[in-house]
Length: 433
Ligand code: ARG
Image (cartoon, rainbow, N blue to C red):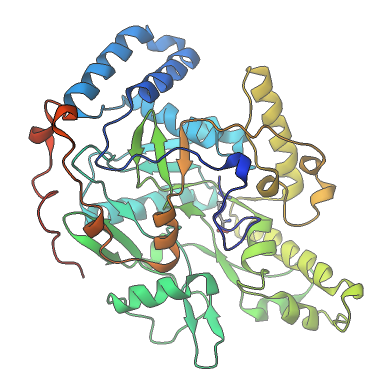
């Protein structure tokens, strides 16, 4: 699925041909009935057993008129989530889109229960190392009732601490997030380390943002070793097993699910060629090159490239040794072309963003490099709202304060609107931590 730090590290701007995606619906908007119908037609078209679409469309249109939104059936929800993955232009791992498991947690709204279910998500996804693609879907936004959201970019992320001389201990990407959660009351470990797992921040309109440290038992990490260099272990590197994106909004048929954490498994380069290698992340290449005894005095020795390959070997080797699912960029590139083929045979376009699909090492060695892709934009989909992107990096307390739902114009007000509105949504926000 989408990467949180892909080719354009540090910026979330999409290339022009992929930009201007869905205006993500917010809590105070009535669901677009045409978008709902468009989704229902896709669902019934691909699932002939679901029965005639017309009846369902008529029902949903009425439901939207009455309530401003509609409820997906379990089958629609599962299908919608899988297709949102299928449409994720940045994800190279989409061959497995049908295998996504869906946890329907739409009834869950309270912060504690959201956090508890995120922890359970990590356990189920990890599955003793045989990672399972999984999504947990929390309450959707319905008019007048904003839904819970998760601030963190991923369920598991490492803190970054800036020290007095400007250096960073840990993941520099999360320096601001770390200081925000610290100011909100997060107890940093007595001894700070490079891989301190950040607490979850779950925000609800009723409770404001609340912190939930993850239990150690929900976090599996792989210590990195190298197949040929025993000293590699002394570098003390490790990474978490499950990549679970938690700040993207899933939009299905006009209904918006702002909290729907999902995971697949890692492709080695995400860790070995980005997280641990990027100069603005763990920046390990210079140290590694020294340990490897490479000549770093000139670029022409290609010491960076040589160190990078060894780092990526270590990642793939260590995950395999630990029995944690991982894939390499050569295999995954082939799978991706197979996926595109399958999609074409099903009569579908496969949207893809070249700059995210081509792996960050040895691009030209993989078949995904040597071609172009459809860049159309399809729904259902996962989107990153700009404010969610910012919260994921910096945190941003009291978010709901400026997003409190405003009652719609009288003439557009769905019949049951006032009745369905949650009791606290219009009042002042309860105190935050
Ligand atoms: N690139 C992100 C990371 O390093 C993970 C994005 C999702 N990746 C995945 N294989 N599902 O943590």
